[in-house]
Length: 412
Image (cartoon, rainbow, N blue to C red; front, side):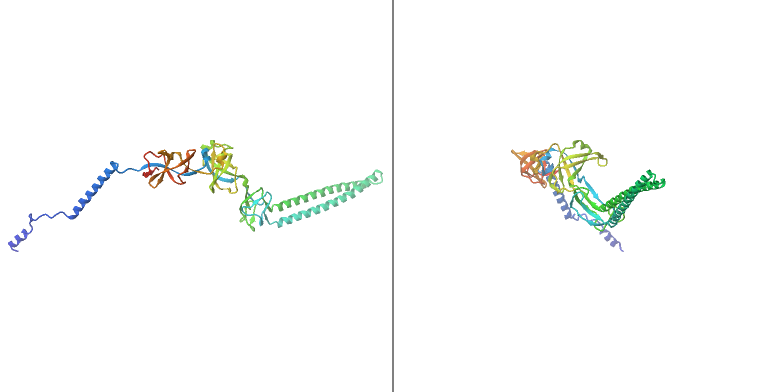
């Protein structure tokens, strides 16, 4: 390569400082515009918040509009429990055998002594017949012994008379006397045999009676545990056997057994008036009275069982229903006993605006001022005669700043 060519190549590597610098890329201009807009938004939001353009939501406590009975103003304590029959029995047979007759089903009402069912009795019937035959044999033996006694008595009297006249020997007299005493013993033995045979008859009759399963008291059949053809055993020990035929309960003995906390048991006393509500019959309130406080506590639950009697029970009340007992401070008057539930809210939910009674009802994240017509006070609640419906949410202790449309948050 020539020297001239090398100089030409090196000269091409020099930086031309006279060439004009090109403009900034278009994307950089877009970033400058975006950052400017974001800054403007931050400034505007700050001015709105700190300048009062945006107001924060007010935190409130709420309650639900509910039904309440006037008697709840006298409530001192509530407790949960179950309806329990105080007179209840699993009725079974004293004998073992196959069930051949069943007279009842669930729900049947029975009287004391009525037959509920019967197990097979051919064996005990045969034993009874044998015992009755034994009585006949024993009585026949007794008649024979009595006849022998009559004959022995006549012979003895005759020999005694002859012996007194020295017309009979000592041996004849002694023989007649021995026969007479033996006849007396024979009659006594015959009488004992008859009594023994009659006792055997009674025992056989008891065995026959044991095949009948009878109601021990007036009651209602709750459950049926066996069907015709199954084996009934007194203790249900045999494989495949049933221990009881039916479960019987005296419905007149129904009570509510409620568990009361140890810390509140001092508020409960025998004879205390109560109201009973059942989950199965929510619109009915039954009157009751504390019948008994069980004198022991449950250490696991720290509760004491209290038994409450019904004073106006009806046929809808059934054993094992869940119940709630309301213990009252005093007896209900006539106006409260038959009164219907009333719509109510806590007293603090009602406030006065422009001379009118109003409450604030929740509507999503805002509240609405609703005028109401109030009635009587019931404990800490007040009756609402007009303006609200059950289930609505209302604000408790509304402040003067609260008005229709105000945003709120519910306190947790």
